[in-house]
Length: 347
Ligand code: SF4
Image (cartoon, rainbow, N blue to C red; front, side, top):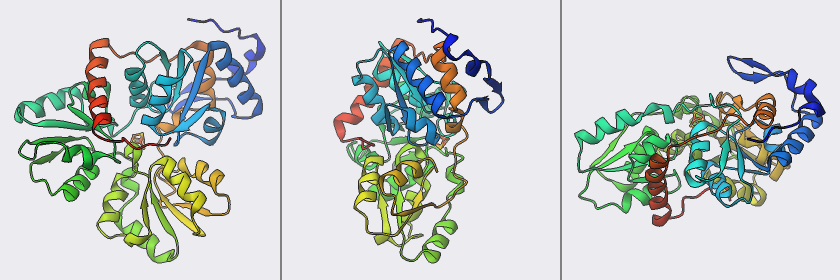
């Protein structure tokens, strides 16, 4: 592991405080950004940031996008070290697709309530109850769950993935119940069993709120970003008619940014984690982008603080490990998805 010279700004490093909500004590200012870039260069690292990261983390990164797009960038990047500013399952997915690279996450405690809603033991027991079923898992799952999965999916391609399966085979769909309900409605499939998982950020975007927003913003468009699981309830509710269908756009990150640049709307409501607003406002400053729920902020995403980034690049921690056999099986489930159709994403 490279040892970084701490002299240049050891005072900044010394200010890092490790608290219950993550690492704090360092402001994300220009001096910090210069230090992060210098350390990344010394370490030969590329910096990837998920769309739901804090604005200063997005601004310092080499690439910003959704989890799958970033994992593919990680695999293609010439650098041997990847710093993944996102939550743990995302850094694991990057490791699965880049087994020979060093993958670092600035704070390994940054979990995901959706990924945590099904464990490998849960899935094994569920499979035992349905031994002939095909398992489809959303990308918001741990490497261990992906390793027990036949085909992964994103919300962009979940319907296509399920339609590719023999209609007579049972399907176990996990972990997101909203995405599962959307897939069942779109495919009309009766033999689709859905795991009752959800994300705590979802809970803040409900049907009443969407209907209310449609009423009070009669000219606004609604952008729903289907990745990360953060918007699947909005996806489901929009399909149920809680928001007029002609004003709803279901878009990947890249599609959302393109649509923002092309839109004539004066106001756009965004039904996803609030971090996405930063990229949208940069892409189309003339549009008034508002969150459907401004409390839809993921506390795990926000654990990747300026202090956590500094610690990560100074110490070379936290390193993400996935055992080779798990990684091989998990990679196969991701690759099967890619063979079936475009996973969508933020490219
Ligand atoms: S917003 Fe929800 S699905 Fe996305 S990372 Fe946070 S907990 Fe997981």
